[in-house]
Length: 375
Image (cartoon, rainbow, N blue to C red; front, side):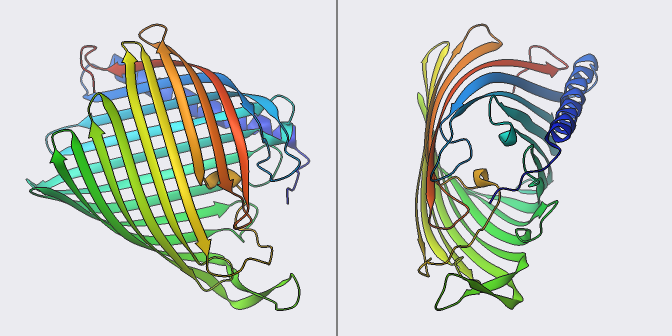
């Protein structure tokens, strides 16, 4: 169900204002770094502008609408390194403006940072912060998604062992039925198997506390009962990953996860496989492939209609993405991309498909106290 607002123009104006504030801030910071020769910051930026064809604008299973859109993306990365610590800052944001479907305009801002300190020769301590703001022009679904993480990393040859705690929360500004916060613990084991090959084993547990009450299905109709206690999920997962750095850069990951919930429709088992390949065809031509496959099985027979989420784009189930980029100059590239998705909708076990065709230009620039230094 989509709820339209009566102030789309005002919403678009406010979103554009926020986007411009982010852009001005990060570009000014980048210029300041370039002008200051006494710091060790490295700042990389990329600006991307393009047009897309979207075969399923509203991510629906029936009555699919097609439209074109223009998009603008800014990404900035800053890094400060010393012998004992590292500071990392990152911003990725932009907007999508549909030509005919004005209610589907979106703006997203992702901001993250990390601080890593070398406690001892083989022990590091760190913290990571991440936040997302997402705005919708035609619906009052605006939300904040944030996480904070503390971790310790131990270099015990031939392994690197990381243990961490993460706290994550989702907050819709106008609704609370989808809001949650999590406690996440994980352990990761990394080993360099050969000079070009690195492997990782990871296992974790999430306790997910929702603000909504748990639900139970009625036996004779399509309605559901709301119970007198909150929904709580226990999520377990195990993953294996590998990275190969040769002429073809490749990465693969397999993950099995199990979600156990006290609410109807939320207990499931899932297998997920992802893979990426990057190949430099020649000095200025880059070819990339991204692939993801998911197999998900729910414990209950889902014969009752429930909704788990407003933002359909937060769930990426099955996808195939390939792109070809060519350097026009050292700083300007042309990117052609094809994307296909078969994603689970906000109604569990029901999937929708969409295709995106993209044509974009990307401009890259960086700031540092020495133009000859690169990361």
